[in-house]
Length: 417
Ligand SMILES: [Mg+2]
Image 1 (tube, rainbow, N blue to C red):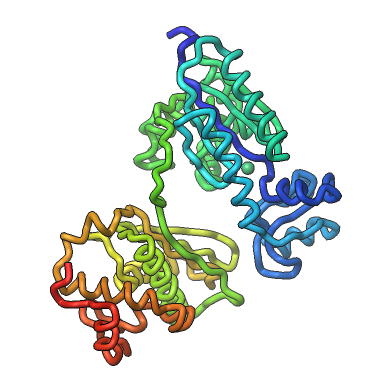
Image 2 (cartoon, rainbow, N blue to C red):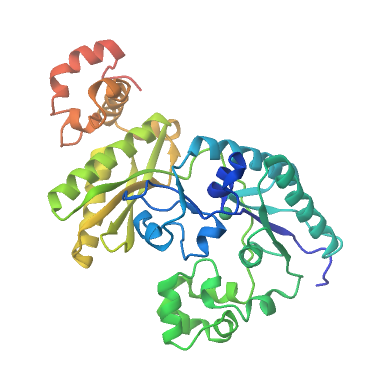
């Protein structure tokens, strides 16, 4: 196929977004090492670091204490999500004018399908330049853009052009562009996989593209073939515009001191499961996949997930699975726990699923929704689960005592469907 008429995918990534947003409203901070996230001396982690701070080896996700040691003269600012979200919405609006096919990958990163270009690189280049100019003028921020014939190559091109850059990989040049890069440049190859590949003598994406795919099963399992293709710059995945429904709902918590006791872990997971379930019910969603995230005291972060037989709305049901998964991880790692997270994905609208429930389950759902509305008055951690007790189905907890009143108040009846 010729160079012209190939699909154009543009990857846009705001540079050091939170830090740049702070500089935007406080220009006197320009040029200084700036760290957003946590308080100095606190247990938080760095959310974003300006490029001046990155020169000291500071990275997002690093504990603030460590960042302080690396660069004591840095300016530390708290995270102001409301402000960043406002800017991100403006960024999205600009991207939305460029294409109807925009997939938002995070608050500051998106990929866009621009449709086939008649002339490479002039046409895609002009779009990228226009986008960068608009973001600079209208938002006062810099954005790095990578353009290629597919998402993976566009993303890698953007990563290499950061900060404040623009890079285009011509059609047909994908494999040659990737070949000299270290394997961890490819999205989806983390430090662990990269280490294993190095042990096997594979350092660059060019080398990765040369090895037989079956050989990669040792490192990537079922993903081996996909990774092999990606390393050659082949990536047919479409850009999928986001639906309005969230892809997942979840909560996580960092503890003031690390948890070593299984019962403490269990209690925290029950709370997180209940919060997650309440959030799903509030949004009218059911979830079928339970994911658990555990960060240990040495910052190793691991996760595991399990698919339920049927979608759930009940925090107790979620907690049961979450506990099982977390205890598997705890048994493997045997370390104190610093952070726990519970997340539900495989979400479907409650309305679509209601007819699948038997009346008893439906009744529990109605009661939980009633309790959810009361939750602010019941105290922050007192969710429906606590009130309905530990069993499933009919309430056995303290809610038993207030049920008659609740049922009258919210017109919950046995035959409501
Ligand atoms: Mg960014």
